[in-house]
Image (cartoon, rainbow, N blue to C red; front, side, top):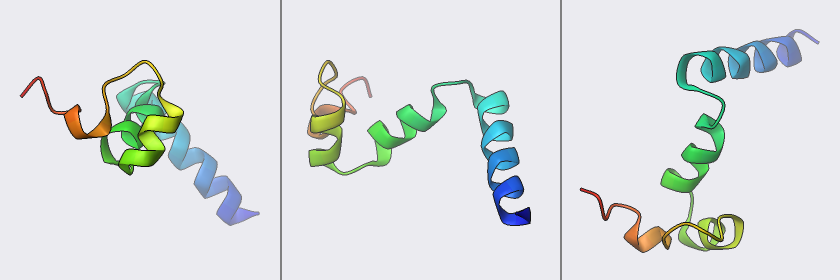
Length: 53
């Protein structure tokens, strides 16, 4: 139970600090290319995700 409480408080802290979309953005930026392609249909391919740099 304590582990679950720590998990959800940690997620809440991260979302408050960095915004509601931080988990989805993290999955997009640091996830595998095939995962990003299947989950995020309207975004650039994972190979081109750094095109703004």
